[in-house]
Amino acid sequence: MIPEQSIPLEHNPAADIRVVPLGQEGDGPAAVVDAADTALIERTLAGDNRALDALIRRHEHGVYVHAYRILRSREDTEDAVQETFLRVVRGLGTFRPGAPFRPWLYSIATNTAITALRRRKTRPVMTDMEEPQAVNQPDPRAADPADVAASRETAERLEAALARLAPAEVALFNLRYREGMPLQQIASALGRTAGAVAVALHRLRLHLRRALEVTTKADAGKESDEP
Image (cartoon, rainbow, N blue to C red; front, side, top):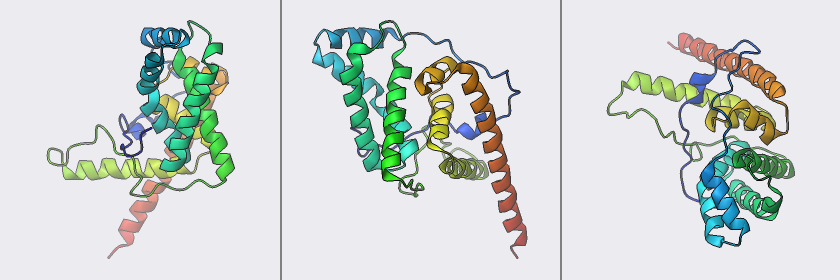
């Protein structure tokens, strides 16, 4: 699958954690059917194995990142990704034509990862060796070192806060802030209503904002105690 590839973030999601009044959560881009996915699925169902390979390659990395954020283990993630696409292949004949493919795919990926986590029972905290690398990290040679350090500290605090969330909450965070899915697609992927997703996102933002504020104050207190 993707054994040695670094795991990028599209941006620092901490910047998106702002408290939005309940009921005003935007739905992002309209949920549209991807024509390329539709064409590849039709060709796959007609027996074109090359189309299946292309469909897997198209989504493999995104599924890997999503599963890794839940499992926090490369070995377990590789197994979960493989199991996810095996389930996709087996169930593709039941996929509703004309529906968006990503919510269905990420529903399978989320359930597979959470099931694997429950079997393992423990969830490791990311080590420095496993820390995902951001795609749009500021270039230390071009950016102010103080800004780079502050951004890195915020990302580390966010990762620590996410590590304490339930797997379903991590999945919700990933789909909204890392995958950029609109509410309706998240609802489809997680088997909830769009209203329930909006409420869960509101509560999640509040929780993460408070967690980040607590760690920031704690760090500031430690610095003030230093001689």
